Image (cartoon, rainbow, N blue to C red; front, side, top):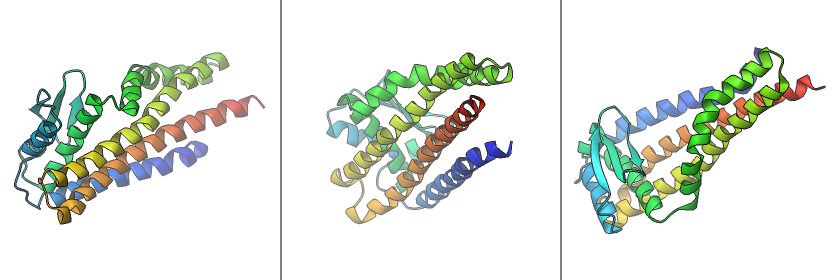
Length: 222
């Protein structure tokens, strides 16, 4: 058990810090007003690239914002959709950045989307096969579980450049489209950088979980 905590505790603590950082940054930047709402900013960014057919919808929840590549729709939480704040336009334009990636067939996004089924299966069946193989002393089953769970790690790793690139596109477009002034870009960066930390934490957590089980399985072979 102590060994598990040595692997799991650092990414867990980083994850808690990242969540606090996001909430803190979003709250702070929600106090700084902008001329446009999140939905209006995203619409301008999309239209500037000729993505007029990409829709924007309001959804429930807090920070539930995402781009749906199948429906070609940005789904923005109420705070982001209606908010005339740096936090709202930053998050909305980040999601619009994913629409840009989709339209341009950005390679990491294509690979990430293709990896979704394997990652979903690996995070469910893979981990149970791994644990079942260890509990019942069936090494072959455990190794199959490890291979399946490795799909989760791959998804998290390939997701990093996708998210960083979407944030970079958002920051560039916010200024170039006149949504915010150049000297205001650092406000948006504060929100997007905090969000990026959550992806780093999730990636580290999956890597360390895989490393722990590999350590156990390889140790049993000695």
